[in-house]
Structure formats: C-alpha cells, structure tokens
Image (cartoon, rainbow, N blue to C red; front, side):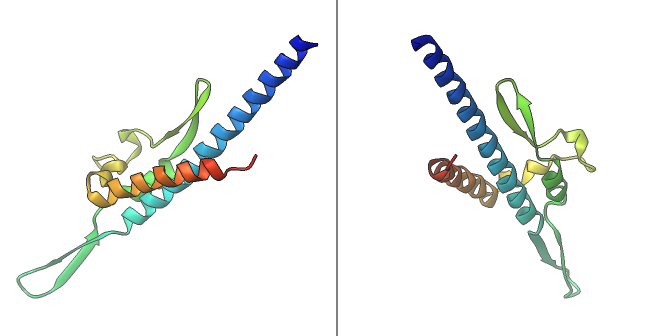
Length: 123
C-alpha cells in the first residue's frame, strides 16, 4: 500500500511541476514579446542643419524579435528562445535593445513580475 502511494505522489508531483513549468514559460514568452514590441516603437529624433526634424525607429529588429520568441523543450524543462542571428534580416540580433537602461529595467521588471505570478499561480 505504501509503495503505490509513493508512486502516485511522484506522478502528481511530476505533473504539477510540468504544469508550473509550462505556465511560467508561456508567461515569459508573452512578456518578452510585449517588451520587444515596446522597444520597436522607440524613436530616434534628430534635427538637421536645415531645421527639419527627422525620426526613425531605433531598433528595427525588435519587431522580428517578437515573432521569433518561441517556447521549445529543453530536456525535462522548457526554454524560451529568441532565435539565432540568421533569423533576422539585418546584421544584428533583436535582443540588442537590452544594452540600454530601458531594456535592462524591462527585463528586471519581467523577472520580478514572474516571481509574483508564480506565487499567485493557481493550478
């Protein structure tokens, strides 16, 4: 009787762990896509000598980044991947927006919110 109970508990614990891992991976995927979309809307504004003001998107590949973020299986767990450099049309990777303070603070915020999400998760 004790052996069967131990096996059932292990199965329930494994299923619970898998469900938590899947929900957290989905959370990170959605939040990182949202941050990449926000970064793609950042503009660089400059003024020419003739007095005209021009602006362009600072990070062009972050829109591609949002479409390249995917969840993949990594052994027992899940991995949120942002693709390889070859997945992007121009020379740099879409995660380049992280080199600025806004990008760093966005990722710190996602990680902090993920902790709160994990604590409030109901399965």
